[in-house]
Image (cartoon, rainbow, N blue to C red; front, side, top):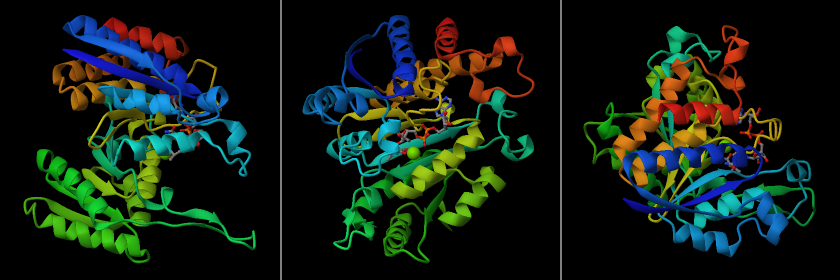
Length: 356
Ligand SMILES: NC(=O)C1=CN([C@@H]2O[C@H](COP(=O)(O)OP(=O)(O)OC[C@H]3O[C@@H](n4cnc5c(N)ncnc54)[C@H](O)[C@@H]3O)[C@@H](O)[C@H]2O)C=CC1
Ligand SMILES: CC(C)CC(=O)C(=O)O
Ligand SMILES: [Mg+2]
């Protein structure tokens, strides 16, 4: 199969982990006899430094012309500590999602058995957890009007959802529920927010098209609690942009670490495959970032954008094998991990290639 992949590492550990994700794709092409070609493009802080724009037109054009995008992360402490900065790396990420119409962000919470003890949640509560989040990605408070009032003392961000936006993400989640345990949880805050009341109305209506799916509605505060108390209660989850962002960082503790969670951002055009984590300033440049989220994002790319199931399975299996061998990056090591089994980003990548 011939495919063109755009690699967009972005900032911080995005650079470090995406290098490993790309190597895994190269090895897969070699092993399964595919012809993958690659190009790179700038986004985020590195793009601002080079062009003044967090998402240069050239990057967007290359994304549109590619068969899939492997994305890293954006962000730099310079902006986090300067709330008044008008041009910010995160604007590049949000614009990419909007321009490419990436309205569905699939975030699988996959717990590898080897990492049962890496979590601070008790193994008997965790064992068997397997969740698939559908986070709406191009609406909600992230994309509404925002600003400061004339008095300079008041700020606002408007949350907005249309029926159409809720319907399309709900259908994607129900379709997935039909292929899994036929269970779907919709998470909202319908006791307070009008956008959530619309969300619930639409999900209830779409549910009639899927009579076999058992639907549960949870308020987001309660869902946040249940995720830790009883993760096995969750199967497919559909939720709004802001709630999905927060709940999936929380859910990373079910899988052991932020460094283990991959995602697929899809819509009607080119799909973007990205770890759920950010640029992680606290570990940038230290060579200790866990590359598995990028590698598992590459597996989602192979599966969803290219339909290469066997190849995607080979990647997941290599991750499993590395974990079974006892190798751990620092974030997923625990008290029982011998110090000589703790590896950095590149060495973990090399171990993965060995199993491929
Ligand atoms: N998709 C994106 O590009 C995202 C960008 N950001 C940006 O990233 C910057 C840092 O934000 P934070 O809130 O610190 O979130 P973060 O996700 O970058 O890091 C949170 C914590 O998880 C750890 N972590 C994350 N990924 C890891 C990995 N692969 N291996 C080991 N440990 C890992 C970090 O060291 C940190 O302690 C900010 O500028 C933020 O705006 C944040 C989230 C997503
Ligand atoms: C900059 C944020 C919108 C990115 C984020 O936290 C995410 O997509 O998970
Ligand atoms: Mg996030």
